[in-house]
Length: 306
Length: 282
Image 1 (cartoon, rainbow over the protein chains, first blue to last red):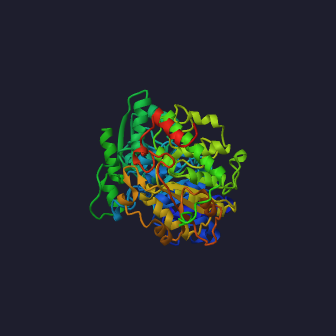
Image 2 (image 1 turned 90 degrees about the vertical axis):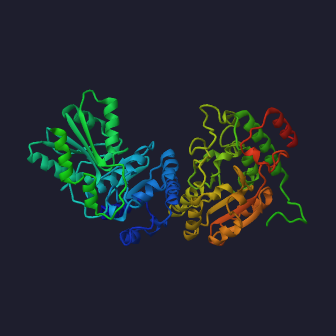
Image 3 (image 1 turned 180 degrees about the horizontal axis):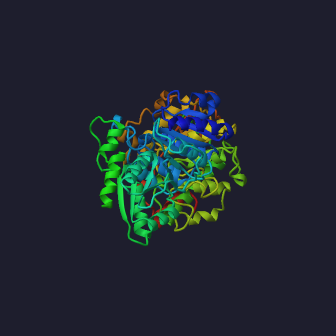
C-alpha cells in the first residue's frame, strides 16, 4: 500500500502542481522518484508532527494540496489538536496518510500500532475517514481526495497486502462496495482486514452460511443507503475492523442502527478488545489474538448464527 | 537593543502614536462593553500592530483583501483579538460599526478569531503554538507558487512554552524562509505568572539566534524602531526573522500596566472612564 501511495502521488503530482508531500522523517528511498521530479514539493518535516500538521494548514491556505505522511500513531493521536483546530475547524483540503493502520506494526508494540485512529478522526467535524482495502483502493482514494474540499484521513497498511480488486473498481468516497454476494449474513468491514472478511465468508459458505461482504472503505460519511438496504435484508449483520471496538466502524454502525433502523436486527461487532499488547507478536498473531483471523471471524459468526 | 538608547528619546511619528493612543482607548471600551477578557494582552501589542499596518510595512489593500500576493499577518496569540479587529477596522477591512458586535451572540467577531470570518483574518487562532507553523506553511507556499509575499506572525512570550513553536523554529531556518517573521510580544507575563519564571524563557533572543534565526531585540512600544525592522524584510541574512518586542502588559493605562490581574479582569464603567481620561480619548 505504501508503494501504491508513492507511485500514485507521483503520477498525480505531475498533472497537479498544487500537490506537496510532507513526510515525518520516514519513507527512506520510497519517494526518490517523486523527489527527483518535484524537489520543491517534498519536505521532510523532521520528527515534529504537530508543526507538520499546522504547516500543512498554512500550505493549504496558500493554495497547495498537502499530503502528510507518517505512521498513523504519530499523525493522528500525537497531533490531534492541530488536526482539530487547523485542519478541521478551518476545513482545509489536507490529506493525512496514516501508515500502518490497526495491528500492522504490532511487532513494534503499542507505540507504533494504532487501533484508536478511526475513533478519534471520525469524531472531528468536517473530517472524512477512508480505509482503503487494498492497493487499488489506495490509488482510488488519492485520486478522489483531490476533489474534496475538506480534510481527509486515509488509513493504509504497509506493504504486500493481498489485492482484492483484480481490475478497475467503481470507487467513490461515501459509497460502499459489495465485494461478495450472500443471503444469510452480511459482514460490513473496512480497511486492510477486508481480505480476512472474504476468507471468513468462504469458510462460512462451506458451512452453508451464505455470507455477503460489503466494504465500507469510507467510515465517515457512512453510506446510509447501503446501510438501510443491508439492515432491511439481513437478520444478522457483522461489523469487522482492525480497530478498537470503541469508536470505530462498529460503533458508527451501531449508532446509526439505534437512531435509524426500522426493524430488529442482530448486530455482532468484531474488533480489537480494549487492551494493549505487552509482548512481542507478529501482525498475524496479533490479529488472531483479537479474534480477527479468518478462522476466528468465521467461528464468532457461526456462534451468533446458531 | 534598538530604540532604548537612554540618551535620545525614541522619535515616534506623532500621528502613529495618536493612532495607538486612540486604539487603546477603544480597546478598553470594547473589553467593558463586550465583557471580554485579555485586556492586558491586547494593550501590549497595539504598537506592534500600528507599526505593521500604518507604518508602511505591509503590502495589503483592504479593497482587495484576498489578493494572492498580499502580505499575511497572523495573530497567533488569538486572545488579543480585540487589537486585531480594531486595527483591521481602522485600516478599512470592514466597517467600524461591526466592532460593536464583538463577542455578542451570533457575531463573526468572536473572542478568538476565525479564518475567513472577516476580511484580513488570515488564520484561526486561540490555541497557542499554532500560528508560527501555519505561517511557515504560508511562507513556503509563497516560494513554491512563486507569489512573493511576506508572513508576519505575532506570538506571545507565554506561547513560547508550546513545543510546537520550537518544532517550527527548527524547520524554518532549514527551509531558509527569509520571508517569515515572528514578532514576540514579550510582556513578561503569562496567565498566572512571570513568563521567565514559569519556564526558562531567557535568554530569548539568543535562543532564536541559536535556532538559526536572524533575531532582534526592540522596544515594542517604539513604533519607529519597529517600523525600521519590519520594513526591512527579508533582511539579507537568508534567515527567517525573530523580533523580540519588549512590551508592557496593559500598556497605556497606569493602573493596568504590568499588573497581571488584567489578563482576566474586565474593567467596570468607572475604570473605563479613568483609563480613557489617561489616554485623553474621552
